[in-house]
Image (cartoon, rainbow, N blue to C red; front, side, top):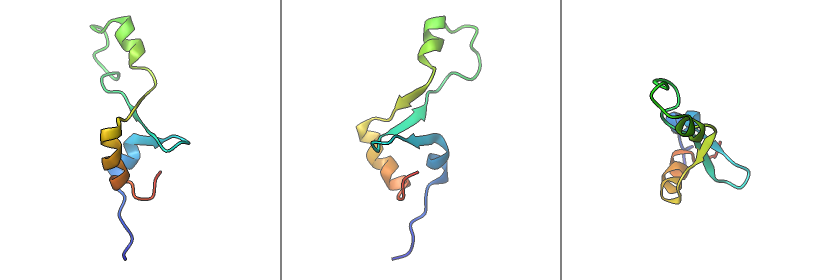
Length: 66
């Protein structure tokens, strides 16, 4: 069996937790912040958790983890 290739786009955008779940950056926090409410901007802080439905695809894209 040849080695599997890692999807580099997924490797650069995701982090794996110690328990094997994946975290992602939330969209919409980088620019055009003047029209967004402070509550909305606070919710965009930190990482979001990847859903279970998406995590199966991500595990295929990252065969050796992160």
